[in-house]
Length: 392
Image (cartoon, rainbow, N blue to C red; front, side):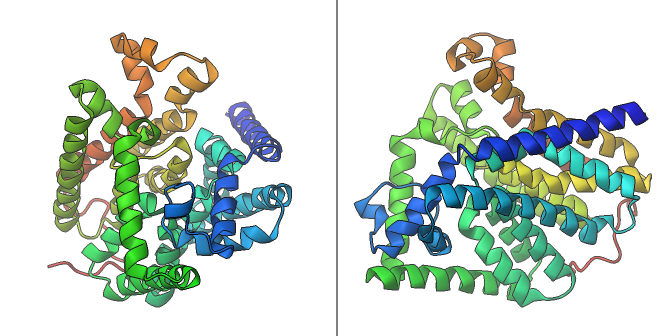
């Protein structure tokens, strides 16, 4: 066991160093964020006058400080930001759920996260997924401590990557945490207002233009929105129609929201499992690349907590194993590392499963946990100390 753990820690350290070193010569997504910030500072309305990247307009306000640096400087600093965000994530997990864990468990969780392909890609591309995940966890901690205004502010800022964090806002809405939700909405509105005022536009016009551009881009450039964990592409492949696949995707997302509301009402005190299910839903209901899978630190922490507490260990081990496979990114290995073409993989059943393995895994784990929570005997996994409001 000692040899295996030492090898695991060595692998994590290697992944960390590799991520940092390779990030210093890449940063393709960071260049996009810097361009958004520079455009807003220069008064350029990119939705109509420049490239449309996808993030909401108010994100440009958050990225405006990037305009002060050269790309080389920003790239080096952002590596540090992402590593600090990773440390913050692990500290927040400890304060949220792992205070009573042995040091060995916390060390293994840290190594587990550092080994993920999603961690390496986030750091290498200069993505903001780690920072956004830290904001979500900080919002949860503030909420747990009844600092609802702070929780709302943190949640609002995290909505700069709303495809990943909107489900958490909906969860707070379902919990009737009005102050958290209202503060988050006000934060988004204030940032959108600042964006619009700088450009001499109204926030309503900015918002409507963004929605139109997003829908137009999605319709005309579907391949660009084929992610790794979202369920849409496999539905389109199975039906042979992008439009039918999209319709089924919307129906499944609505069904998933209904299922979550139903099961959360049935087990209102299983807060940790709620957040695990919300995290997985955020990955499959809409477009995501592999870097967004860093949000799975929440399920990883909850599964590890099941193992440490020893009450319901089997689901914990199964969950950790599933996240290990997701962290390896089987689909990415086949297409990015082995350079196997998507069309050749899709031509046979085994290749098809390999091509869509990550999305199948996330989708299957989500529904497995829904069923697990539904069948859970009363009293198991109950968390009497949670801050969850009673939902009638």
